Amino acid sequence: MTFRSLCNLLQDSVTPFVVSVHAKECAAVKLLIQKVLEQLMGRGVSVDEEQEDDTALLQKTQCTISALCQWYKTVTKERRRQENVNYKCTQVSPKRKENLAKNDLPVVVIFKDFEAFNSQVLQDFILICSRYTQELPFVFIFGIATSPSAIQHRLPHSVSSLLCIEVFHSLSCTQHLASVFDKLILNSQFPFKLSSRVIQVLVGIFLYHDFSVQNFVKGLQFSMLEHFNSQPLSVLCCQKHEALLSAKILSKQNVERIRHLPSFMRYVETQEPQEQVRLLTNDEHVKEVCQKLLKNLHTYHKNYYPILQCLHSLTSSLPKFPLGKHIRELHVSCIEKNLWETEEYDSALQLLVRTKRMNPFEVLRSQVIDFIDSLVREYLTPAEFQPLNEVCYYSSSGVLRQRLNVTPRTSIQAALTHPFYYLKNESLKTNTGTISSAAPDLCIVYKLHLECGRLINLYDWLEAYVTVMSAAEDQDTNSEDARFIQAVSEMEFLGFVKSTKQKTDHVARLTWGGC
Image (cartoon, rainbow, N blue to C red; front, top):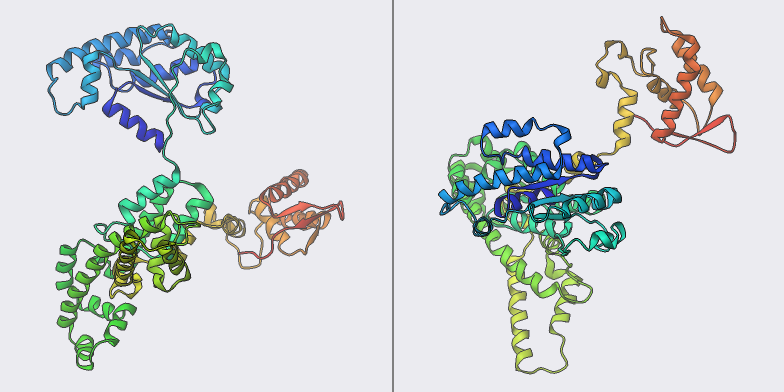
């Protein structure tokens, strides 16, 4: 994702000649050069379609840097002529115009996984390219996962001295995650919201499983899809103007759904008896109240996020981070409980006001902290206290965890127990407790092992397998032993059994319970 964004940025603002290569595709220098030429000449940078067709027919024997030089001269010459005609076009960025004026469009080669490349291949490629620097302005970008010293470890001094090395660091995964939070979750303009438990599930998967921002965004997209699919009142989860229009035309069924919302029921309980009767019997009055509550909900979000940012700025640098190091941690604490009632909040305030003597500045600071404390108590109330919060907030953390963080064992057991649902073979349909001889060997062996205890006698297991297979017609009995051994090996690979030193002719069962 980072390299793709980098490629797009370079192509838009610096040069169209950007190549990205993987180590697995470049086992030899010839393959590396061929990959570079193929990506450059197939990227639509040729002058016209006729020339593009000619470059597509380039023979592998012509895949040399000298051939690239000739192609580069032809393309840049024609591009320079075309750009001179449209030089004042607003579509061209200032940096791009500067490069065009210098006639200096570099050829950028991105090595995504630098450590995985063969050292000799890199050395030869750099040495070859160094001979053409007057004709081709090469720029290499090495994607290094360890440290910049990897260049010195992989390349000898005679090669690394040919490079003008500059080090830059990409943003970490957690910084990308913080950016996603700021733009999507901690944004009053984005009507869809996540409950504290849903955020904890998504962040937990991110931190403890894959560190993938892309998967985090997919989880957010799934949450949104599930919310709009399972919550009929999500028609009100939109921008303020659209939500008010939708509230005016709510159907009778949706009005009843609003009456059954837990937050709306709590709101009704706080009203006067006469108002309660109207809310429970008059649909038009419910629509009017719904519009007022939606306005209040949007106002709540509009006030909530600036105060949250302000509180985070004050407390993020405190020792031991009593309210969390990241704003997402503070946000989760605020939407699930009254923050000012926690020990962590009291500890943070004590650290903020602690001083040896009260000079005018400290007095003013104390007043500011008291003012912010009053804002926190007024505006950072939990979201579940807001009427109609169910309209915007997705809270089904169990469904989300089940979909995004599935257990492989459950899926494997379901496939081995009910192979029909996966193979769609009518002969595999069986009654509960029976074993079909037409099932794959692994399924038969798995079902037989469910009937055994902690230790499984291999000979008894084999005899049971042979008994099941004897019911099948046109079976090669000579291969039954080999097929059984293979099935047991697959069971061991999947983690259902393992060999044991207690008895050499037994295996130990590792799992209990089935589907």
